[in-house]
Image (tube, rainbow, N blue to C red; front, top):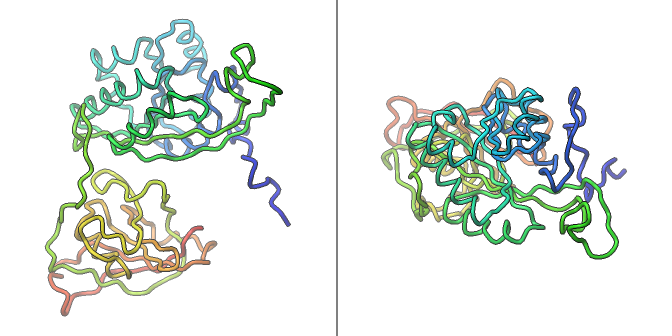
Length: 352
């Protein structure tokens, strides 16, 4: 039987299932609610700050998941409405907040904005946040929205992600709104064919190890963090599933992140050929400071790393592609491949 929701039709937003959730605006006055769906898990237990919040529809949904929410909004009329909805509001231009009162951003660790003017705002705001979090020695994840229907959004996206090491996720949305003929600013869709399309969310990482207020060029090789004489020695173990890694997130951030994935036989990172669980664990051991666990699947062409994995709560529902997972931290005294001690290992399945 086909799925109840066709694969070509995005599902309804989970926001509509939240208590007392309502919207004031419609897309494109606000971001699609699919953006709130995307952000929900990523803000869980964290402090969310939205720049340019307007009436706060996206924030209203995200607030059910975040530890706290803050609106950064320059329009006094919107500020009043946001406070009426119970949100913390910094009612001033973002540049003023970042440059004059950066301490107000000290608790923000997830940011989101969809700019009014991508060419004038995106890089400027990103540089300001990189500088603030480098100076305050705090980590943050920054999501910048780019609408496929907006030429300036899509013009700035490639260079911004390339220069600041961004990672792109595509969000498909459909909030209705069919229109016969040419769209215009007299229509409710503001020069768009309807309330449907694709949003590109570019993710950037900020923190004390980031170079503030300037681009970082990605180096072709990663720095080895442990001697080449150290080796991992994984065993087979239990079946199950630990956590999905998103291919769009790529390698991830081995200094700040929680997980990432490396394609097999990818030699771009100065390690050589990754082709087995042992070479996957060795790569983790030698090059990724945040890596404590690795999973390997030849079928899925995947070597994934994780900072955390609850080995007592493995998901048993997805075992179509077997993954072998190893605890990748070097046991004390393990210094050479010959006679090395065996690392703790579990075997978990790949989520498709």
